[in-house]
Length: 189
Image (tube, rainbow, N blue to C red; front, top):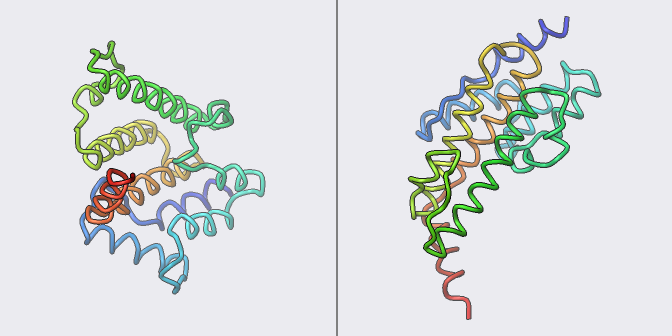
């Protein structure tokens, strides 16, 4: 019955696409709040997803599901996850993080970085906001690749959660706020 329940959950969730249009953001927010019967606008969408998933997962599955977050996916516990999509995305994120570190160090010292695994790093924008968007798009593409064959199982739900977190990260970007932080950082004496 679990597969049927997950199929219901997955079909009830809003469709996600790699877009930051206000229309898409509003639609995803509205559908999540309706689906979760949430009236408080400050409730985070991932919290709504977690609450809904908890109804259909075993306690053990739910603990694992809730623990998965984009910002910590590169940690060792996820590298060794029993969920294949988690371990694959974790390895991808860890490798990307390591290559990005090497690439940025080489770039700062005007060295030519060695061969990079991800072509996008060679074309990484000097603008931090644009560079972050390029990296988010790379993560989105990997998640989409991992989604093939997973439509209504726990792996599909996990991948959906990670995609939602990618979008929420992107949607949180604010040019003015980011520029203010940049200026404060540069002007520190």
